[in-house]
Amino acid sequence: MANDTMIDTLNDLIATSKDGEQGFLVASKHAHSVTLRALFADFSADCRRAAAELQDCVAALGGTATTSGTTAGALHRGWMNLRTSVTSADDLALLQECERGEDHAKACYAAAMNTKIAPAVRTLLERQYQGALRHHDRIRDLRNREKASA
Image (tube, rainbow, N blue to C red; front, side, top):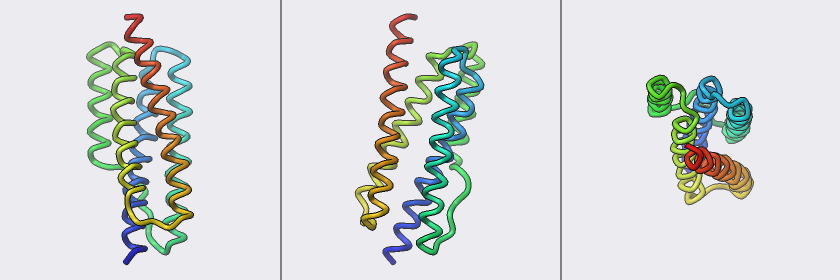
């Protein structure tokens, strides 16, 4: 039963990572700043790699890994598309939406690490959680900078 719980937890994180991958991809397409476009594309690739690592972990545990994000993530991307079209693809709006997405990712990783998981899986999740924190903090700092210059 512990394996099933671990697989469910990992599949939730895969969906979260897929949401991040697609969310950052949307942001990279809408950003005005070349620097932000590149940053968002890099973060999208990070999320894609994280999902692949988690999928490998699920397979190693004998489970079937999810391959897509969540409905809530799709709705968030739709909201991001709408918001950026209404605000003329304002980089500040993109940063705010990406920060919201990373707040969600941080919460998902924190919850996952509060479950009973194998030490090797915990090591993977801790590393990925640190990546989510770095993404969040970088976006927050850029948002603050963008807000101050507006």
